[in-house]
Length: 111
Image 1 (tube, one colour):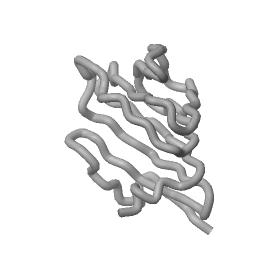
Image 2 (cartoon, one colour):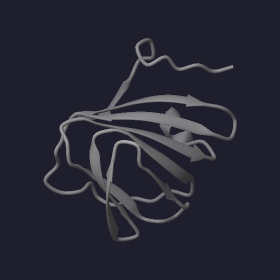
Image 3 (cartoon, helix red, strand yellow):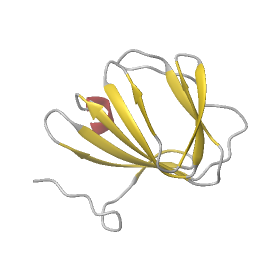
């Protein structure tokens, strides 16, 4: 059994103004990301990975760019990215929280 309690799980700083908490099983991973570096003047560089990804916007507003297409999302919205497709975000508010879900798990996040 795995449990993540927001106020008891230590966040890892992965970049200035970006922290991440992880919970995972053998084939599924959820990552809670907090961005406190917004709003951004421009989007992050696009990236891709072989993992399927579904992300929930828990707080704030973003632009999500998926394969070059820009969409404005706010709290409560969800987006999905097939494996291998270039994507990135641009934060539009001072604080953004995303809940990213990956299958299979992101082994690179565990290092």
